[in-house]
Amino acid sequence: MAELGLGTMSILKRGRDEGKKILETAYDAGIRHFDTADVYDEHRVEQLIGETFGSRRDELFLASKGGNELTADGMRWNPRASYLERALSGSLERLQTNHLDLYYVHGGTLEDDLDETIAFMREQKQRGVIRQIGLSSIRPNVIRYWLEHGEIDVLMTPYSLLDRRVETLDLEIPIVGRGPLAKGLLTDEWPERLGEKGFESWSEAELRNLLPTLTQPIQAYALAASRRTCAVVLPGASSVDQLNETIAASRYDIDEHVLDDLLGRLPVHPYTKHAT
Image 1 (cartoon, rainbow, N blue to C red):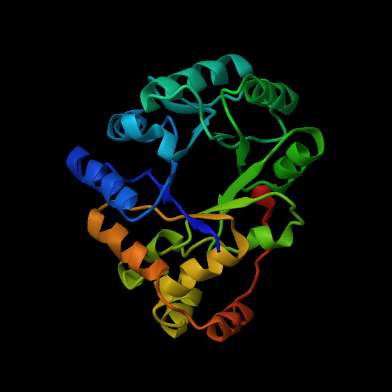
Image 2: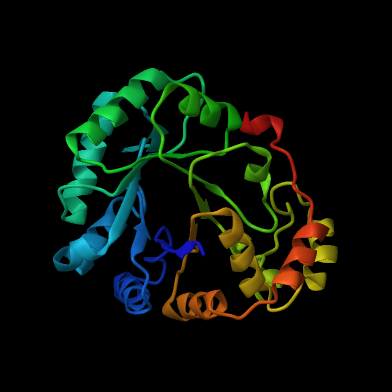
């Protein structure tokens, strides 16, 4: 069964104290795969993880990401090796560690100098600064380029019952699935989470018709579906209560035949042009 990790992008939404409680609650529940990025809350999430787990580093699997550079005007994409070197160094310092178990390039297009980026990542792995090379992407052409020209150990990409695009790719590397609950649409909170634009390939009208018909408890079945395809499933949490609900759902004894039927009823949408 796939490992349950924790995506940390939203843990500071309700303040630092709640964020620390989320991390400790996850740890106490047996979660050891913690995923972050330098840009999450402008470095503050990495700092909190480092402060919380510094003395327990050897018990954790730590993953971070680089490539999105914070600037005075916001954020810009910068996959150059010179920047990634600074970004990686900063992540190591904030996380209070001398290596990362997994480091992702956080995006990219074919217009980038991918060979330069790949060479940098390979060098860091050879040095032991990172143990595994990751790519976080929704672009199939970029994913294929990395597979054909680089050394990539792990792909992070969205995966949920409502976004199964990655199933259309023939991949032989582990997938880390982010967003398994589809921004809350695959929970009981879906009426409040559904916006006018829908979600990915689904229109608002389609979702309003679909979501009430999904097998209950939908959160449990959504996580179980992700665990069939992904090696690691990364739900997020903005509160301890939300995390506890997710942990409980991940332990629910689902009916595999019911899950088979659910997956058979839902389409696997292709990648759209904007994702190439």
